[in-house]
Image 1 (cartoon, each protein chain N blue to C red):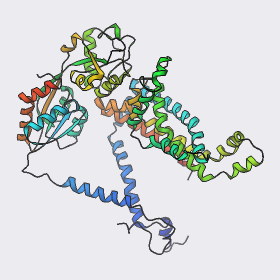
Image 2 (image 1 turned 180 degrees about the vertical axis):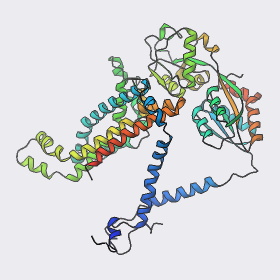
Image 3 (image 1 turned 120 degrees about the vertical axis):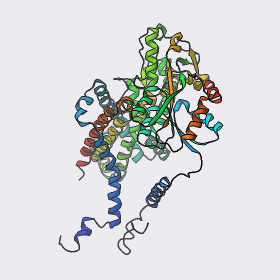
Image 4 (image 1 turned 90 degrees about the vertical axis):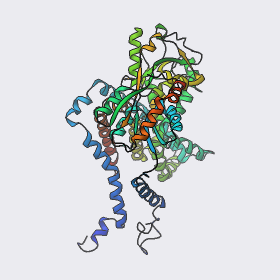
Length: 266
Length: 261
């Protein structure tokens, strides 16, 4: 690289300056409110606020439910994404639209949908209730609400990657005599591992931040259904400082997830 | 504007798609909105902005019609309203659902002369048909799914005060952040019982039944109203408050299930 006129366009990767200017505006639009939040936080009181029993209960519950919900997303979402990407079945396009719908639905609508189906008087919930299983106001309900809204994130990431990768290697493996199960485990999944990582991290982050569907479907009780976002919302009523402290905690966890996910890429 | 984000003519024009016009539209929209909000209100029209606790929204609407003023009503949870007024939201009148939140606004110096305008009492409600056979704040609640508000919000504080008077220890399956969430849990049949306010019983309609609790009348929740300090519309604001505390206002309150102080 010479230090002549060619340098600036290289650094900008050929982007026009206007794009750069808008990019700066765009980054400020996202980062300034975060900076504003950090400035408001009562830092000296932070350790005490974060270690109160209600905060710890909410944090622990959020981590537990988010992990369980993410596991559920992976278990069901990976086969679903591969089917959507590869299978030549009628109705796949409609199915994709339906499966990705929770991505754009307001979470409270997702909560209503779950309530109408799995609630006490719902389509399946009524039968479950009769059989002695009750989901209403349980930690299981929290996990289901999180998995419902988070699964599309995993499906979307993985399906795109599966489509781009094509199925050349799978075809070769099959002609060499590998059974579908072996091809999936030994060829497809290793190829899609980076996308699976990103999708899983995104799903986990979405689970951690879930609020509307959880409140609508699962309720809010300390240690049972009151996750970190619900605790933040409630604390805001009486102790805005505590709400800010918990917000920082959620922000920190989210930042770690994003860093871990995208570090390998660059 | 579209030209600016396009690559220079002759360089890779075919390879690169043009910038999405949606972005440009969004930017234009932001500019327009910013310009609109900067415009001052017309000074000679009697405009009034009333911030009112969500449960009083319908009553506020009726009262506003009677005054003939051009009233904008913003209904939300009381603590949200106070936070907004403290942050400089353009309100002329503030009505909260309890005295504690109004006291917060008073401490911040953003309101003048709060006065009580309505009272509400807690009410024990069950889904239509009372499937769990609740008979009151008593042992019948023992195995039932009870939903109340969290103690941090006024309706939760009222529920606990009521339970203390009745000598019962409440074991809720959920403590919601808002009385509307409690109402929803009961009307949808998810919960066997809930503690809401008198004024909510009418809102629940046919999906809801009230179970009498004798002590309920002893637990009173007062709704105070106040002028927002520094309002430019104090005459209109006083007129609106007079309408709310006058005969027609009291009738509207009573129709909605509120008491008057």
